[in-house]
Length: 280
Image (cartoon, helix red, strand yellow):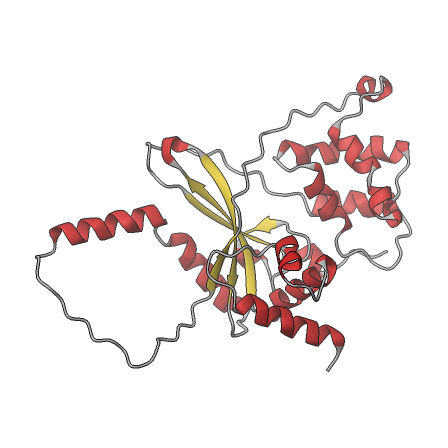
């Protein structure tokens, strides 16, 4: 057995034994088991996603008072599933009533039902379900829109924009994407559009550096293409809701770069740019 396969099997067994609601992010998994670090855990999770065992999703849920927050969830299936199965499951999951709605419906049904004791048979063996277990990570706060200025005077005065700084740091994150000051200035407007759509510098850096080829002949051309091809969707503004009314929206995350999108846009858990790597 190859080392990668053994690592994948061990991580899969560990994840399968986790209770519902356990943290499923790479850092938490690497911290909770002593065998593998974050890079090894991340590689194993990506391989399990491609194999059809899991999908990462972002859910936009509503709270009391109309406050909206993002919740990252991982759906796990012990049995490997194909793309059609996952698309159908996630579509049904998005249409499923939010927990608060389900609780209210159950309460209403219990109120209208006659008060008669019901005897339920106890199964001799525990029921086996094929529905993926849901792993809920800590809720992530909704990023506030960032006001981005890309004026030349700002850079010349020693106060570069967040987009310029993120581009300038790419070379320190991975030397294959080292950009000159002129390159950063030329790409600044494209990167600023990412910030205008609510992402932060870490998200941008991860999307640009994930899955790099062995060598990159033109860092400027490579980054420019990724800025164009991986541009995240502009999230629609949440409609005003009455207090206590849950809001539900679901987007799948690419297992390689974390880019969000609709379930049908992914194959084997990967977005199109990650399925078709850019040429060097």
